[in-house]
Image: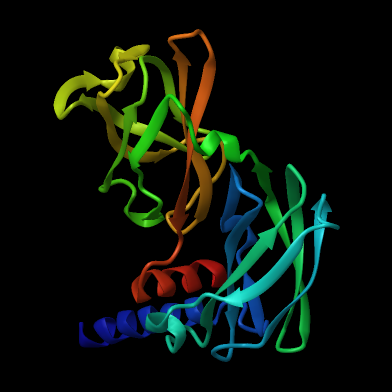
Length: 278
């Protein structure tokens, strides 16, 4: 029996080491599939790519961007890795949150791939889901509705247990016709409050007449929309969209950007490294 137990322990140890050693011949690895960006906003935008290296704080340079309307795009690259995980070595690798900060003169940009030089080695990161950004600042503000509070950043792997709230006030009488995310997410168990009073499930209340001066809260839990493969460690960038009709019959939308970050702490970082190496 003792020999059998020792054999099981040895097998478990070998499997653990083998898992960490998977594909470690490459000095640099990345997860392009975890980048999911489709959003509208101003002319400045950005996103992060999870990149693994064998040494901490590598030197990273931007070589080129490929896609549509990328010629006029101004972009800089930054290492956005926070202190808690900078020195975390897991399975022989370090996780780097490589950030791209962009500014565009165009109304529409699609980035299919990014070429980086990491410690003098050139790599091409091709996105299975291209990064799409639209410039529509007018939808971020409205004469009819005004956001009071929105969740700007959440952790992707806590979406199932974290209730989020979108609160807004009416500047005039409006009829709210819809609330949804433009892509990637949907709101589960959505319900609403008016002036702090619970009104019930959101789907049962729409279209909703909101009178001038009233404050509305839409609450619920994020849920993947099921349109593609997701993981709890994706970096997701999208918009929450409130559609409405004014008392004068004009249709409008009020939009807020939502960022779901893939890594919030060292435990997340280790999980991301495991995911990329697998």
